[in-house]
Image (cartoon, rainbow, N blue to C red; front, side):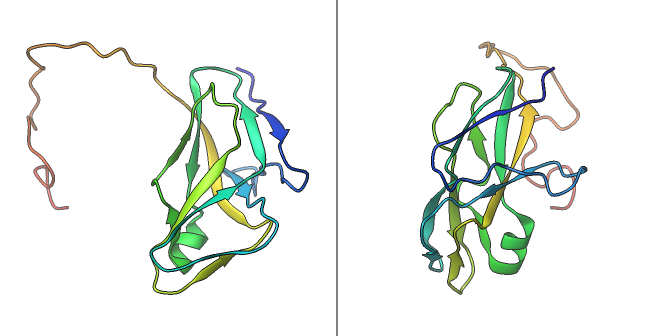
Length: 148
């Protein structure tokens, strides 16, 4: 499978995603903003990256995850948990951020704000049925298989 992801710069100051090391699973996404953006505690903001992508196969998706340093050190997380970029989307990738800390955080132009991981997706076909197969767990919910 072709592992090249086509990138289109939508803004001149956009930065092409980069993997920090050869072993990095994700490529860093950069804030494509003209001036700093301050995120107040409890606030949500949308940060543009200035890029659009083309995935080489419809069985791939681009998934956006928080950067661990921003989350652990500053309480800056993705507002939707994990961002999903579908294979047929060609618009600008934007990163929704939220501040779960009790202090303001300022995103600066060109700052790394998320990481993007390209992963396979399984295009499931959903079939209505009257019965599901039996398992040892059955319909046990949260905590039913051990300590949370």
